[in-house]
Amino acid sequence: MTIPLKPLTLLVAAIVLVVGTLVGFRLLTAKADTATVAPTCTNRTIADGEKLTSNRVTVNVLNASTRSGLANRVAINLQRRGFLGGTVGNSTSNTKPSKVTILTADRKDPRVKLVAMQFRDKVTYAKSDIPAAKGVTVVVGDGALSGLRPETRTFVVSDRPIQVCVPIIRLS
Image 1 (cartoon, rainbow, N blue to C red):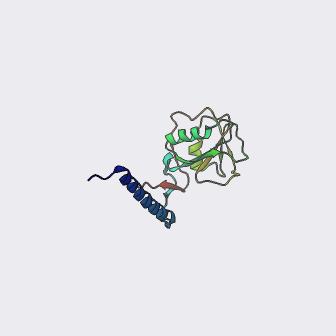
Image 2: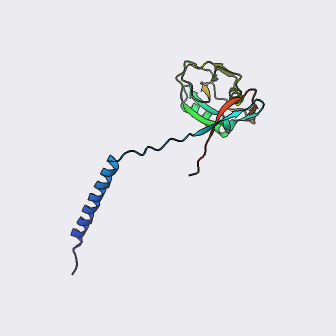
Image 3: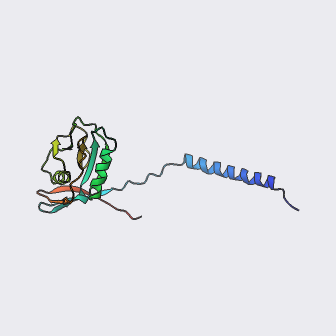
C-alpha cells in the first residue's frame, strides 16, 4: 500500500509551519538577555620618563574638507602605524583647518605630540568646541593631502604621568 505524496507533503509543511510559528512567537515574546557589559579596556598609567607608544593612543579623525572619505583615509593610515582607531566622521567643530588641526587644551601632552609628529604638514592647535571623545581629536581640511611623514617614530618619552586605556582582547 503506497501513501500518496501530495497529502504527505502538505502534512509535513503544515507541521513545519506550526512549529515555526510557535518557536518564532516564543522568541518574539522572550525577555532580552541582559548580560553584564564587560569593560573594553583597562586603565594603565604611563609614568614620567616611560615610552608612550602609538598602540596606546586613540585617535579620532574628523573631516572638515570638501573631499569625501578624507578622514577615513587619514584614520586608516594612522592605524597602520599602530594608533587605535576612534571616531571617524564629518566635523561639527567651528574649527576649519586649511590642513591639519588637533583639538586640545594642552598641546604639550605626549599623546598630542605623538600624533602631531606623524603629519607632513604643519599641525595647528585649537581648543575643542565639540564634545570631547577619548583620545586625540584631529580635524583635517582640504589641504591635508600631503599625508603622513615616512619613517616617523611611533613613540615619545612621556614627560608626565598619563592615563591610557589599553584594549582588552577576549579570546572566547
